[in-house]
Image 1 (cartoon, rainbow, N blue to C red):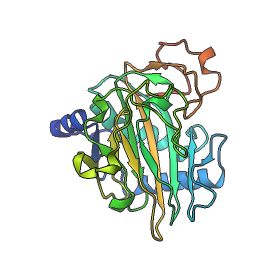
Image 2 (cartoon, rainbow, N blue to C red; image 1 turned 180 degrees about the vertical axis):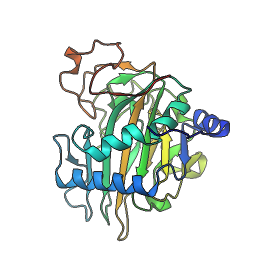
Image 3 (cartoon, rainbow, N blue to C red; image 1 turned 135 degrees about the vertical axis):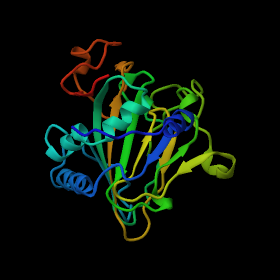
Image 4 (spheres, rainbow, N blue to C red; image 1 turned 90 degrees about the vertical axis):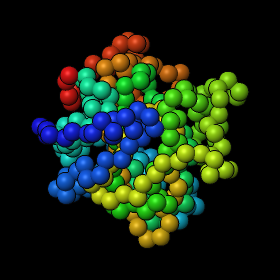
Length: 271
């Protein structure tokens, strides 16, 4: 198991203040190559949760797949043995770290499809405050194609979740929750964080931090890999809607409000 990563007090404080943090060179070149092999294995053999997240007329293609760690050795290796879980543990102020799920996201060259500004928490079947998501590219990411975050937005509570392609309020009645701010209408008025990234770099962010990304213009791919981590206070929260990813039947195995103590969510680090 990897050891030795030590984030600075300033990095941890930045994460708690902003809800997002970049960690340069988190992964070694060998680990980047491992992640790349894992992504390509996912693309060659999509799982049951694989989906195309771009429109049919998009000149590029945006695809996603979830929960492949049990089948793809490279994904399990990075989840268990890289410094990603160590960083997550420090950003969650110690305690245990469970893997929630892995997530592969690939935008091919010329993809127009944007990922709209959103929070992840409403789309998940867990509740709690100690959580961290990690997002790492295996291709260089230009500023116009990177993830961007609204600094401090993890402290705003739940905001209205909407469908990504048609902006529908499918899960809560219109007006029942505050809306995501109209950031694109006046970007200069908001504290937006985003970083040009190289393979090996990773961003960590809270599940309530508002974030988005544009498409991928030009001739370069944007292959990225994400791990979602759960801390000690995270509990099962069955929803009345299909979550992303959707764990069918989990409500029969974990009671609402119970810890995510299940083989699907392996314990990666202990206090």
